[in-house]
Image (cartoon, rainbow, N blue to C red):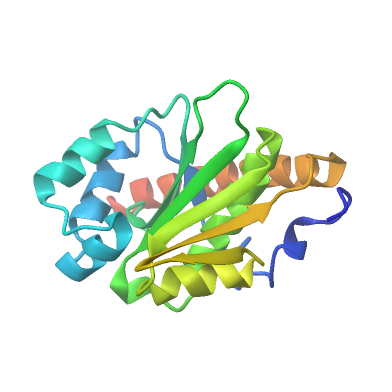
Length: 204
């Protein structure tokens, strides 16, 4: 794949991309990430984590995320609550250049392209971190994740009741860096607007 190809060479543009507030989760939002994951049903937890995660296990998972190393992106609604989230876990081996993507979307918010928007956002950022191999690991029954992987052109490999999908990313380039900068600026501006609107609603 040529390095000059743009973001949307990795599948059709999500209808939510550029129209949805996606932020990088930091200490300000991590408790909202936890609340989002705890709202997942038992079946959704099974598909997201590969097992029926308890509240305690999910809490440990969130507490264990190194936000200074990994990236977590979240979709925020009008009330600045997390409705969808993606964790991009980077290899800690010095010579490794791969990252694993995992995503969850609230049941009521599915079908609006949020998962694809999060994956495309994660791909843009991963390229700035010189990631070459972007992959997912999921249960074979997780049709939503497999559909998402296919939409961005991942190669799918089956391993019994599990599957791995991977995408070889081109090197970072000017188009990607501009896209990344615009996304960061747009998210910051939209977040500020929504915070202001939320503050004003308290007085109406």
